[in-house]
Length: 112
Image (cartoon, rainbow, N blue to C red; front, side, top):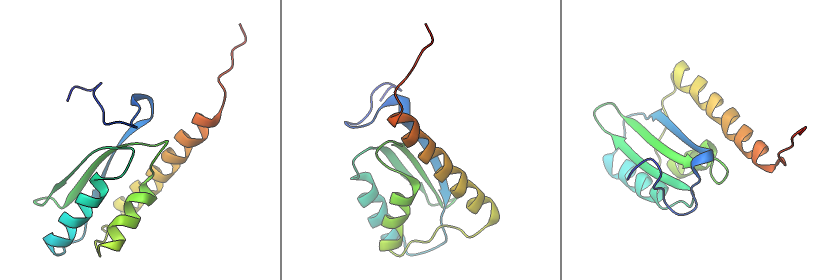
């Protein structure tokens, strides 16, 4: 896929990329969670790096948010790393996702 070819329901203008460190757990649970996440509408791509225990995501922030991803992970018993840096990134991701949604609702204006 080139950078302009996205799944249906994904807009380049509101596309965001995310990376989360996961706690060690059964690989079957992580694989099931990744499969369910991959089926979410608005998701462009998802992958899991078992060596570094990182979940990599790209999604349309107008349709999905980091909380939607975390719900799926929790349903499969997969926990996000509890380190300080991971918590800071999660809060930042929430802020940006909400900003994208809020800005999408605003009508553009111009003084011309």
